Image 1: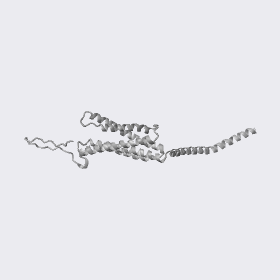
Image 2: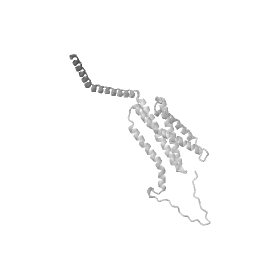
Image 3: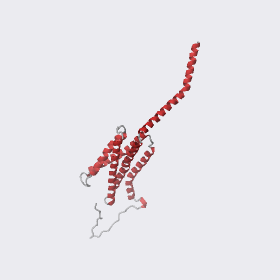
Image 4: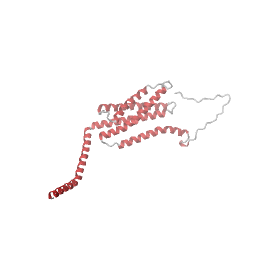
Length: 253
């Protein structure tokens, strides 16, 4: 019985030793996992040279300036021009639309050249796949803009519809591309993107609000609400039998 008692005692001591050492083993494993994760992040950051980080940042800034700033400015300008029949204001809005769209195309093209030349284009993420389609539609939109037919011609309606469809597609893909680009930047550099995401969301919300509110602004003015203006009432004009009714002079466009 003594050998059996000794074996039981040894087994009990071994179990107690394992139970006492188990927390230290787990903490050591967790420490090793944490160390490995920090090492992987350091290796990723080591692979990204300061020059490459700068190029990624510049690429993102160019695409934001193109899709997130100039493109909405051009859209709002042409939206405001629909309320103008003719005159100097209409020409200014048209030039703002055209110039902002041309600069938007140039900046997006510069961003595309940077990505093709300096980045690993494996197309294994959504940002790169969306970018390819976006660049193609941007140039298609620019080509359609240059082929604008004269107002009043037969093909003007079809051209306007295609121009509007491609412009809407560019705007939506541009917004998605900016958000996915921020996620790709976070994955590449392990830097926080929370601030930039919040800032771009606020900017986008303001643009949408202004785009939708400008038509309501004209409607409110016509209702005589702004600055206490009274509604416009028609005035009765007495015309003598021998006098012809004069038509209001219209400005030729």
